[in-house]
Amino acid sequence: PMKLTEKRLSGEELYQGKIVRVQLDKVELENGRQSTRELVLHHGGVCVAALDEQDRILLVRQFRYPYGKEIIELPAGKIEKGEDPRACGIRELQEECGCTADRFEKLTELYPTPGYCSEIIHLYQASGLHETQQHLDPGEFLDVLRVPFEEAVRMVLAGEIPDAKTQVGILQLYAQRRMGR
Image 1 (cartoon, rainbow, N blue to C red):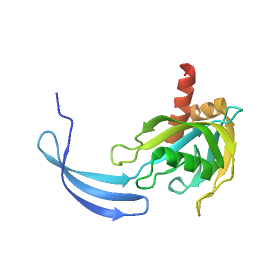
Image 2 (image 1 turned 90 degrees about the horizontal axis):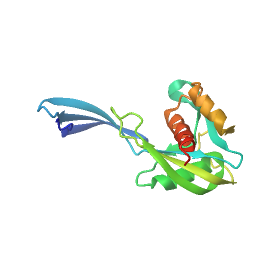
Image 3 (image 1 turned 30 degrees about the vertical axis):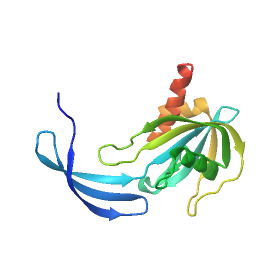
């Protein structure tokens, strides 16, 4: 069997921004040949599937510049360097949706673009919600939606929610329900 590994030989940072760093690495492949890898380095993110007492899931609608349109997503945010993912999720739910939760449990992790990006998105489920007040970041504008869970599943399957982390979070919960968890 093959080793299925690559060894980093050298690297050069091409860009450092507020959210990402871009790096060009030279690597040795398992067959001894050399190649290059373009990397986008990111601290990771968190996504929260929060369900209220009426079995409605909290979604946010916001403009996403790279796509030039509004996207419907689960509340989410980037992890600050050294921040605990769970603490980040609790903070993001409160900031974006104005809610705290009695229960906050890990669902899964997702690697959105493993071919070139180091980002890992941690998905959590929140329940036992309590209304507080939103604390949006400067320059952050969004609408909070409360969508019946079955309608959110339908929206994902109909292609109305193209965001991958939201699709995974909703379908993960749906599958768990189907399996009796």
